[in-house]
Length: 295
Image (cartoon, rainbow, N blue to C red; front, side, top):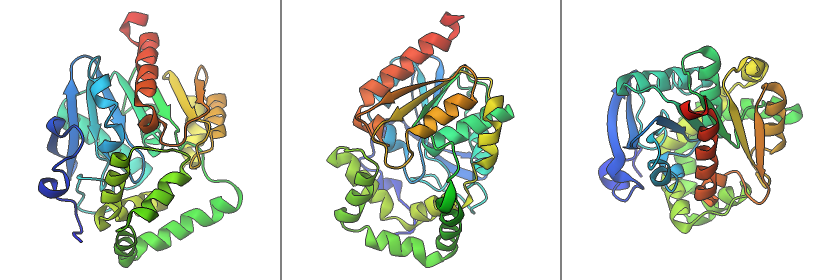
């Protein structure tokens, strides 16, 4: 069991491998996929995932956009020197450094789960100025009640123990544990997608990054700042989402003037992996509403 994923071994059959490159930015060695032509579309995955999460969307969207999709810090094949970027402000600063290194300014951005929170944080802070933001089951609201008082402390304890990530990776060696986690999202994905999640979960470096990210994830300020978001926002919610309740997208809509929700009642947290064509179409339609041609 290697502490880090190796591109030559673990990335040999990585989805959209031909679009992959490695870039140094902000003290991080990034794995980023870039393909297509047209206005720049930035895609950010959620906690515990990687670029494979958008595997079937990237080729579709590349017909209209120049798609840029990185592995977030510590996730997948992106290597960090320390844990300083594994928080909401840290992620936002790191993504800004990557965009500067690539020399691109996204016209449209889309994020899944925690990835949506990063993009909205950047737009509110003025470090990103897209014409629109798409949130796919965005994790934008803090845990409430008992969960709010217990989840973060437990995550911090797990993240602080260097043996936890290795123990989880060992536990994930079989398909059963990962299948159970994926089923809890309310989504059913392909066997190929399941194997890629299992590959990530068997890697201690990736698991450590996900745990630290969850331990440091504070959404109180983001939720309070949502009314300040001045960028058109489309919230896509899966009605069967077992990770982020769809009601949270409606709560966000009520805080962001002019935003709207599309609820896909039969889909779960990984809606974009279940129905990549449908989610890609929603993104393209939204671009038709907010892009230059709409002005």
